[in-house]
Length: 376
Image (cartoon, rainbow, N blue to C red; front, side, top):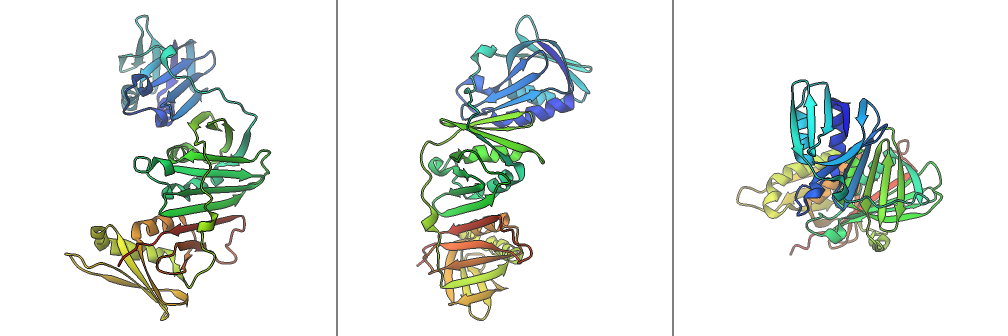
């Protein structure tokens, strides 16, 4: 096994596949990258048993001989990132060491036989659909933040992907908040598609997909794959039904306010200088005088309140809410103004974007609810 490759390109490829290498594991092979050299390409593969990435190199490449071997990801990547020479030559020696050679020096790395590397599941491409990178990336951005943390509530660290004909719905919840994003596809999907995808998978996909790429999604049994450019991303999915969440969204309200989104974010960031001492619990008072007052409990440092101008409908009211939750949803909304509505201080709080009529995109819809805090 021997090939020569442009250094800057190898660095890019390693950055992609390392999204699927295991950092801490009792199985050393999962900390390795499989390098497979074929007669016209080189395939880099990483597999942590939850996700796997396969990247095929076809450019800036000179192949001398074929073969396959595993190399420790951390050491190999760290060395390549320090190389300043234009090209790198990689060769498997007779004593089963990976020799990395450049103009300025060389290093030999002990690896593992390719046969020990875990196989990627065989895929069946009959169930597949194509989706724009813009839609997929935006959908993940609008739902990922409200999925549970994997190390805290793994059973809720997922995002629902639901596609039927030209309608796509994405949703997530951590039991304290719930996001739903609806959009339309350019073309009808031949197959209905509903899978619960790990939030870690969605986060990795969002970070490595590039602009102007069409994403092919393939799904079978308990697996899902995303194909784009020279990259194949594999992941397991959850084999259970996503909760029937639609009835959780309120259909009526007694208090509704419209506010400038950026002004509200800035006010929340200021109040958080104090509220962080009380787990970011804040009180928002809605007044018929077209003001809202945001304040936090008095702390040992100080107490503080901020006034904002709102458009208020119906009743005055007060809610307690986690300010971090509110900031996170405001950050994924891209309109100038937002709507906040609720039935009572203990009812779910509905946050939706408010677009000007000429700016309104009829092909998409976003809504989010946050459960209020119960403060006596």
